[in-house]
Image (cartoon, rainbow, N blue to C red; front, side, top):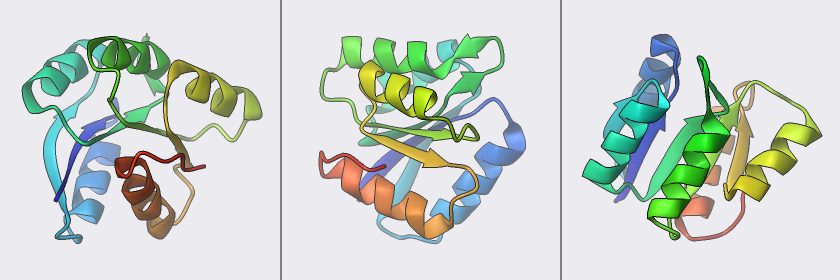
Length: 125
């Protein structure tokens, strides 16, 4: 069972991800958050195997969240889920310590594969 934390500032995206991932018995959603503060609290509480993090969280930065998660737990595994199809964002995400980067326009199977790959400690782009 792979535990997952979903972090996105849009409720409909969080609900969509939760609904999608609930179709996979190997995944367990252990928390959700809409901003950096909520996400860090949920991360500390649940210690997920994989965190799905939006690159923009309202006024906050998902990359700052990735930094904070890895500072607390160097073994944290993060997949950035973004609408930005830009090499700069991918590079910045990987430099921040994310192991994966998935576009919101990708198919659900791409996200599922990324979660499985990152949970195994490998990069997924």
